Length: 254
Length: 307
Image (cartoon, rainbow over all chains, first blue to last red; front, side, top):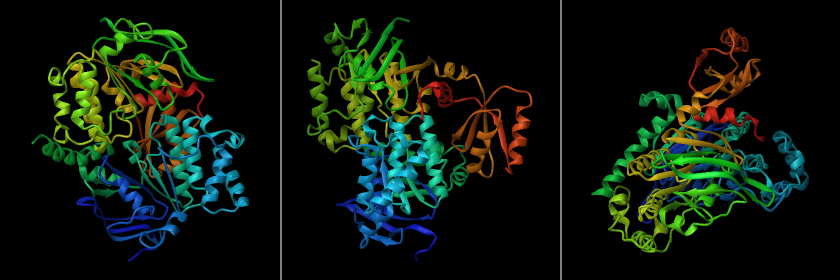
């Protein structure tokens, strides 16, 4: 069933917490080297799905393969082949840039010489070589986020998961961050990301929109806009996610 | 219009970090005033000074005529404050939190229920649930209810929509619009540039400095350059080629287009078209557009220290 071109394949993923169905029969594929936007309202079930894809939680049922590995039996292999960063947790503020590289490189089991080599390449790309010995906490947020992305790819993972990577970042740095995403995808890394910025949804090759535990729409931004007869991804999102809100309001006000 | 909040040459440092650098502005009574800027701009520091939780190094500020340092007790009675981090009692129920906040302000839920009714009735079915067990959207509604229960004259909302999805954000702004109609002065901060259009006036803030203060329309009309939106078959390459065009001041992604700020010039459009066609771009769309607040922000922040 798995296709070589599908770096992530999810078939009939179900995750329940007691009687609550957080992921309701999700089926989707992500192509190798793709920038895939995983969108949805708060509480739609995105985080649950991401934790399963990263090998942190077991699904209730379904067949899920990430980077060629099975999420039931090969979670350690999955973790070695993916990178992860989020706005909430990224780097250690009281360690230097170089120490963060060494620490994360070590966690991924890279040899010291390899870590040095990767650190050199990645810092050069960012133009931050001279800040190697600076404590992370003393750097501007925009730099930290860019460093966090670099460190998430220190072990050259097949897929990098980015959970709201640009939240709260200034508009210029947000674009620079996207330059890095495009470059990584250009070099063959698959990028799987969440965002609340709807202009960023337009930058993805394909996006899925989750509503109430299931995928309500999945296509290229252009096709989704055409399908819903609107001009922006924001309008697509409001149209789709609105349904859920109406239902919730009914439940609440009755 | 009489002023509600007056900020006069406020500066605040944390060690060697200058968080606020000589900020001055005033907001009118009944105004919905937005502070728009990224993390680290100084928004939270400013809100903490105005809510009497921090003392500035320099300058003075007043809320409804009360000085934030000398008259802090009076200010605390007449303001509502919703901090960026959820700060209600997680192990108290929804209803207990609301009653607690009403009682410390020496009022009752019943007395001002009308003000919060629209917001609170959405979470009322969960009134016995501990606040810590609510979803993000419900926590936000409860926090707003608690900040309003004593019918404050001025409401301070520090990044109420950060990390919130586009639908819930829209609903939150609709709620603020209703509160504004009740005559409450509202100061709100946000990193989302698109929310500026929901405010009466905004201050764009970056690295402790104010870049501009105006109505959203005024901010946009002060945009000095010509702004174009361009699109082609190969958007990845188009960005580099647009940046390399000699007349380009700035080129960056914006939704499905690339925005290109260029200098005024007669031959500029045909030159740009030729430049991009020579680079092999097909199905080119080039159109002049009206800037958004985000475009203005990027134009204004070019002089600041940005990597």
